[in-house]
Image (cartoon, rainbow, N blue to C red; front, side, top):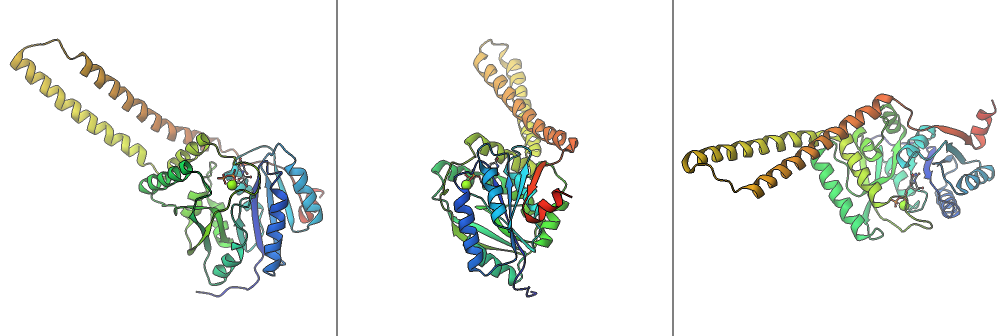
Length: 323
Ligand code: UDP
Ligand code: MG
């Protein structure tokens, strides 16, 4: 593998949504780590994802003090995936590192990531060695999600790997070529491929504030992930249809034969209602699955932008804004 330049330009990309209490800690930590690594050519691209607290004010203040800090203020809350996309589009570095702003992704790993990059890897994944900082339910559902997703999809996503990773410029450029509007980043990251390696870490608790992902949001996220990268659920409904019709056919044949042999008898209400309800359920689920994909086609066909930028702040960007 080709050895790389020792001092690439580093872009840290962090999405912020109501992170007022975490911001101080975030910058203190990240700048310390980068200083210790001897990084001088770097930028911290902060995306304000429509925060309702004073996150933007704090970010802008930081960008006035620190020329490395660039702020992209989105016009409203677009969600983490869109915010990450915005930040990655904005980043100018040779290597790009998306990181959560609540310090759950330890910035200390950046050094190791850069080493791996220098050794020739294009993607360095940070894998959670243990998720004890997450609740029991979240751990089990995450496990289930990876299992189902990787069974159904042609692009397996590595287990317990979040958005925290290092990517070479080449990988990011590839990522930008993917035109989809609804962006399931983990899946897109996996889809582009390139030479990748994994390092392990222990996920910390949030420094401050609360998680922005509730149970329902996570379930929706999982469905989004699976339907973005696989049409297997559609195939499954076809199979379910075939199996159920076959059973129905066998049952019908049995009923006809029985009637011919024993004559007509009345009882059978409960079995009948059970079959009707079962079939009704199967049909509703199938329509739901088909609807899921039609919904996606509908959303994509509108071709709306993934995010809208209200304003950019920071040294270089300010100059551009006033042009
Ligand atoms: N985030 C965002 N927009 C959202 C929700 C979250 O930009 O709509 C950011 C949030 O500020 C944080 C990161 O995404 O930097 C991860 O969010 P969180 O810590 O709430 O998720 P968890 O770590 O609990 O999965
Ligand atoms: Mg978090």
